Image (tube, rainbow, N blue to C red; front, side, top):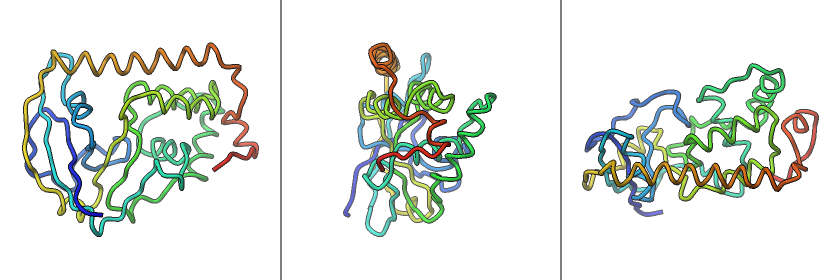
Length: 220
């Protein structure tokens, strides 16, 4: 597979990513979250009132077992099941509780055998879309559409020691919040607007989560 360049947005320069660090409630659990797109990493690096850094790495992909959730082998429900395992969703309604149990039982992938995960990044807008589906207010088709709205919203996550041993720091540069934070907000606002515009136009025909629980088939 050769070598690839990855970027990581952060509040600091990280010359040596450490295996076992990171928050357990990130999208895919503990790991080192990167992207192939430098502009996206810059957006992730800054806060509303804080500058950041974009770290550039080279990773040797040879010998790494990759779980690519964006490949044809998987569908949006596999991604959602992993999100449900790691992120905190409100499941106060009976349908949300049943839906979470259903998705975890039928679509959760064992990530322990993999070194790296490629998948969507659940930023504010993506997380809201997933929550709407879990609460049975949008269809599976609408969720799929929503996940295609953001630009370059995918990430590479190193999760094994082997993957960490094969990544090398190349450089780091500062990121100006006054430039990149507005871009980050505009991207999120644009995705939300397109989503709500589509909901207004759409008749909402399709498969809801309750239909899946009741045995409806989907095209895998």
